[in-house]
Amino acid sequence: MAPKKINCPLCKKTLEYERPDDISTFPFCSERCRLADLDMWLEGDYRISSQITEDYFVQEADFNSSWE
Image 1 (cartoon, rainbow, N blue to C red):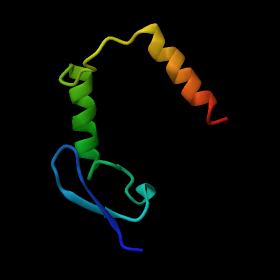
Image 2: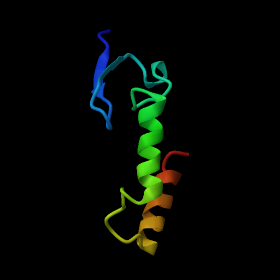
Image 3: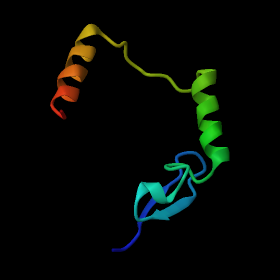
Image 4: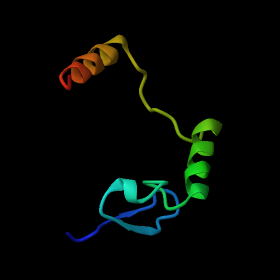
């Protein structure tokens, strides 16, 4: 099977893998990119654009119970 290719979401470096477990920092190319992305979340650079309502939790619970 041919390796799959993705780009690191932060630096855009191309990564090749057969399974996500092949890259310990998946989907990032390195620990540096993984931590830089985490820092952006913690600093508020990334945001969830809509307010989470009670309906969201009901739908999520229904979805999760379908996997059991």
